[in-house]
Amino acid sequence: MAVREDGPLDFFEGAQCPLFLLDTEGRILRANRRSVTLTGFSKAKLESGDIRSLIVPFPWDEMMEQLRRERDCAKTVRTPGQLASRRGNPIQVEVVARRVDSGADEPAMLVLAHDIREEHALRNRLRDRVRRAASGRELERKRIARALHDHTIQGLLATVMTIEELLKRERRTLTPLAQDTLRQLREELSLAVEAIRDMIGCLRADELESGGLVPALKSLSSRTRGPTRDVAFQVQDALPELTRESEFLLYRIAQEALQNIARHSQATAVRVQLEAEGKWLALTVSDNGVGFDAPDSERAAAHLGALGLQGMYERASLLGGVLQLTSQPDSGTTVSLCVPLSVVAAGPTCGGGVPHRAMAPRGTHIDPTSHTASGSADDCNH
Picture 1 (cartoon, rainbow, N blue to C red):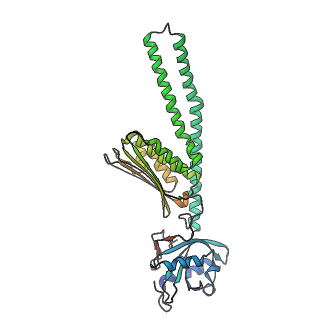
Picture 2 (picture 1 turned 90 degrees about the vertical axis):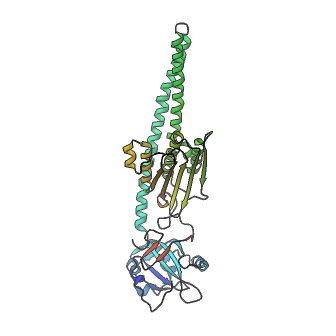
Picture 3 (picture 1 turned 120 degrees about the vertical axis):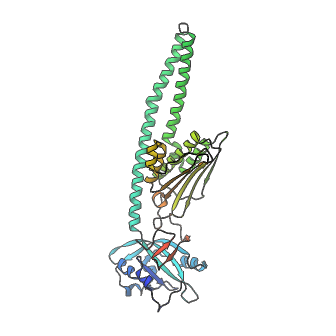
């Protein structure tokens, strides 16, 4: 983008977020009206200053070096920062920078300072909702698991012991048919005990608490594997750290999807994939099984009485994400979940998106004529 000192800059002045045009030394050549409104400083004061004193931290050298390497002027770099304010506390912003053609040997820079305070407040509300919902659900699951272990299983085992004592004590008086019936009942009760123990394991998710999401998903995938069913587990290297509560909700969605595959799909190939891309964390569970007419919402799942699928939609909603079930009879099933990293990541995020990695380049570019950043969430329209 070429910038002419004597040309019309209506797009620049009309942008709904602060914009700064810098020279090759970091001095502010132009500041738009929104930058004056947000900071409280006069236009003259802003345009006589240095960007490094206005936005802290501002890694000028790293940004300039990266922009010099970019041939495409539409490429941007992003970093979190704090914009100085005359009114007191600095303003949390996401800095988006791109090179501009200044006519000099070195590229100048156009800087957008996106106010992310509202996004942070929304993110914190979502995180609080996730924390309360996940903590409450897991505590209830543990309570049910303890009740099953301490009461249900113990009662069943006591009945099994009573049957065994009866078979020993009354061997001579019981008819062969009665003995066979008691033995069959004993076996069925023993199988029920094992089934309840498996249920307790699913309720407690000890592997998740001890090892984290990735090892737990790997273990889930291994348990779904069978003599005629292969399960591939793929996870992206260096995933961002997630909050404990988010891991529980993600684990439960994957657990339900894999249990449905084991029970109903007749699949021979299953794939579980976890990756982060842009501002999203994506979890995908797919199979080549018989498929079914999948409900497309929580309400539709509830109408069908599909409690497991209803729970998956509900958990996705708690995470602020989107769950999509794609399936047709005889065409397999794919469960796709996308959740915002700004909600599930444990570390700080840059502009409500991915946890900040210093000067990570993005393909997003700013179009000042429309006041938006294509590929991002309306950088200038808040």
